[in-house]
Amino acid sequence: MSNEVLSPAEMGEADRLAIAAGPLDGYGLMQRAGEAVAGVVLSRYPAASRVHVLCGPGNNGGDGYVVARLLGESGVDVTLWVSGEPRAGSDAAIAATECSLERRPLAAFVAEQGSLVVDALYGAGLSKDLLGDTARAVDIAASLPVVAVDLPSGVSGDSGDILGTAFRADITVTFARKKPGHLLLPGRERCGEIVVADIGIGDDIIAQVASRTFENKPAFWLEELPVPAVDAHKYKRGHVGVFSGGPSATGAARLAALAAARSGAGAVTVLSPANAMQVNAAHLTSIMLRKTGAIEDVHEFLGDRRSSSFVLGPGFGVGDKARDFALAVLARKRQEGGVEGLVLDADGITSFRNEASTLFDAASRPDAPALVMTPHEGEFGRLFPDIADDKSLSKLAKARAAAARANATVIYKGADTVIAAPDGSAAINSNGARWLATAGSGDVLAGIIAALLAQGMRAFQAACAAVWIHAEAGRRFGPGLIAEDLPLALVPVLRELVEARQKAPTG
Ligand SMILES: NC(=O)C1=CN([C@@H]2O[C@H](COP(=O)(O)OP(=O)(O)OC[C@H]3O[C@@H](n4cnc5c(N)ncnc54)[C@H](OP(=O)(O)O)[C@@H]3O)[C@@H](O)[C@H]2O)[C@@H](O)CC1
Ligand SMILES: [K+]
Image (cartoon, rainbow, N blue to C red):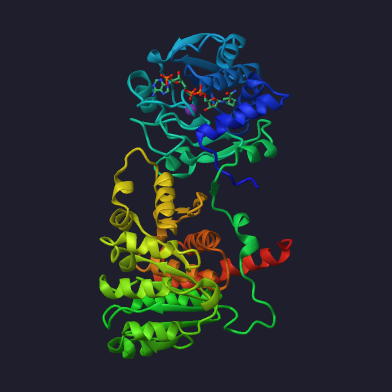
């Protein structure tokens, strides 16, 4: 699988393993890295009048010396600007020795319009804020095309955070696999197009590193995507129950219900309080409706459910009722009752702000239905205040810590949504679209997840698939998108996935 994402530490481990396995040594890998970057410069910027290569003191700078040498040998007009000397005996020191171009101090860096900047100042080893000459170089490069080596200098490969300031690259050439900083915001916005170059670190080496982080792509979950059998009975395709709020807040539940129906659930029921039955009934056709005002109604509905899942939260209201209903669902047995999962969203999450451990305990029971939570930043902070406030943690690390604590799949939403499982697996979504930031969009996501759970997909895979499908539908629809459009916009995306799934070898 090539969608693993490696932290800088894991990439360092991959470097070491690759060097130990041979045939390339550290300098050989650096040579390949420099060749990849020089190749991108030559093919993408054939008309650049001059290339300014900026080299730092570490191996990122080492890559830069290789780039400068190769471009110079290709006849390109190269100017080399350096900040700090490579450590004696390092691969970067060898690369610097091999490069015979005149070195100028970064403090004197100037660049003219029509030229191109290759940023090889800092990559995986970024350890502090960009200051002084380096920060000034960022300002000068702001009006020029920039090709970044591994990462735009200033972007943390671990977190995507910007340390002080950072280059804004048009193309970032990284090696072997992407790093979290290429996918998490704000780093992602600084990378431009990301080219992942093969520098001779094989899939077997990456497998040994055993990263638990992935870029969320269909290949990661397509095998599990449910495709109904020809003879499937509607209840075999899973039954989704969506809890509705009161008479003035029913729309969110219906959006989730519609999305669940479009996402392949065989049957969907809106579970409504008595005083909202009329308004719900007026807006539902294929989706069923059932009065569910009190906890007894919930138990009765849960009665003999098979292959079912629930959405609780959209428009529901915050309080005891949300907690009681959620805990009633989680008290079922996944195996016997067939309640596959509970998607807790919005008010459902907020309702547990002062009783988080009650929720987490309920989800920890070995045979409990899977709990999937979909907090945006504010909701995340209500349920995991200490994790949210920990400035040493990236969004990826926060989602992971939350999932482990809650024994839940956590979808930490945003333009760089992270999906984390209790076992430490995590995926970063990268096909998000700005059009999705619209009221009701999250209700649709909750419905898709519930539909996939009810059809038997495992929670982490269902969550990853739902996030990707939801984002893809929004991306393709584009400007003018409102949440009501999303359920129908799912259809072409699902059709393509189902076709791809049917073509793929069965797993
Ligand atoms: N064979 C290999 O190993 C391969 C490696 N590869 C390449 O190596 C890169 C990683 O190299 P790296 O580990 O040497 O780290 P790198 O990013 O060069 O920086 C470290 C130096 O910068 C300094 N420094 C940091 N931040 C600073 C700041 N803000 N302002 C000032 N100084 C700062 C830091 O100082 P220190 O923290 O020690 O004080 C240290 O001196 C990787 O991104 C890829 O491009 C590829 O070629 C594949 C093969
Ligand atoms: K760089």
